[in-house]
Image 1 (cartoon, rainbow, N blue to C red):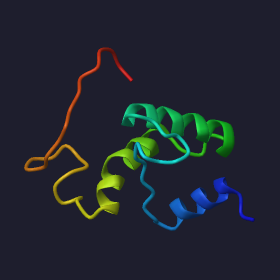
Image 2 (image 1 turned 120 degrees about the vertical axis):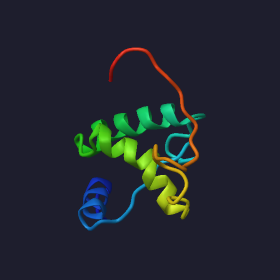
Image 3 (image 1 turned 45 degrees about the vertical axis):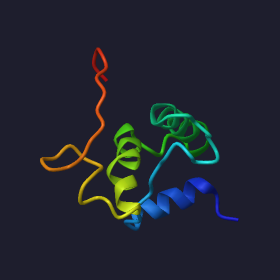
Image 4 (image 1 turned 90 degrees about the vertical axis):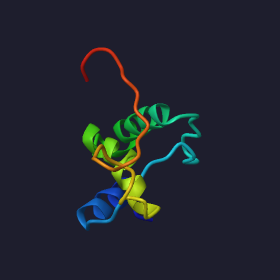
Length: 92
């Protein structure tokens, strides 16, 4: 069997789009922030910190839009695109 980390690394290296959503069976999170936190921890614990914060953000935004073929209207902050926004205090 090919280790999952190798599969993710190979997929990313070959330009495949990897997305993340709140219905991912491994996490079962109730919202995207939870799912992103779970993915980051899973990455740290199982993939040796292969994914950057930017990778996880892209997986949850533009990549998710790409895999459902809506990247022409959602997935990024851009004029004419639909968006749900939230504001958090502090810096990331």
